[in-house]
Length: 326
Image 1 (spheres, rainbow, N blue to C red):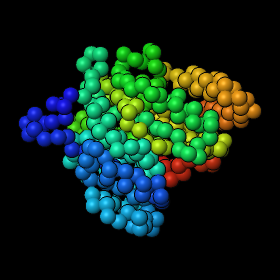
Image 2 (image 1 turned 180 degrees about the horizontal axis):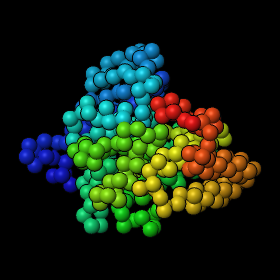
Image 3 (image 1 turned 60 degrees about the vertical axis):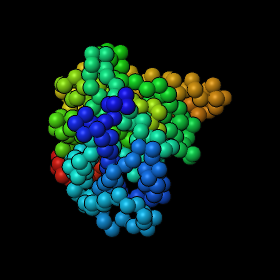
Image 4 (image 1 turned 30 degrees about the vertical axis):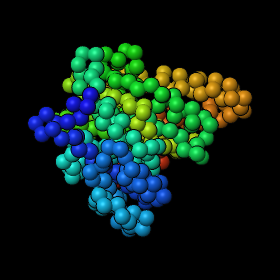
């Protein structure tokens, strides 16, 4: 495996850059940068695509020698295109995308992500992307802690087209909260879709797996601390945007049901809460899951909704300003 880490023609180690879209970065972002400096696998450039210069404060980021900050406006930001712009600023072999609130759990994050690219699928499929395990933060609610373990288990895996019947939509599951890409293969695939409300990582993974027989790796030993405590309204909006992205890309998501995976998660979480002797949390889980489902169904048929309702449902109003709603 060590031989794979070196380019045959030069004998050098693979170079790694990190790209981070940021919006009002705070203390977690500062910890993220400091942890990247401590990695066992050295990071070349840390490229920050910051939304709104007025929200950027250099205080706390001093002394980060490889930091490269590029400012854009809120109107310019797009989940896919902004990351493409960040990728264009790199010449590394592997580029890791992170969010500004994902903190490496230890010094081995980058090393473990790089190792994942040495793997192959059962038919020799090359790994085009490798995503990290997300661990709950200290303030994470109990049900959300379980969701993290459900979506990001302890075992690593390599997913290919052959897993579609077994895993369904999970075959394409990946997260740009922390995900590494082979830069050359990334551009060969055309990069992320230039305009998308959300879900650019799974859209990319779906195309790579279905159209070009690449593999997606889940690197469980590559770990970041990242979680949210969304309320019912926020869950509705998030799932609305998720479903809009799926409705806009039937070439990937048509015929692949995701509701069954959601039901499995709810049942499994309810059993977990009961085992933890906290059955009173189950009704809240059911209510919040209902909001998730309603948001998802509304997003799936968003083209039937009036413009004012779409703006009420979405988490990303700026997206609809660039794409006028009815």
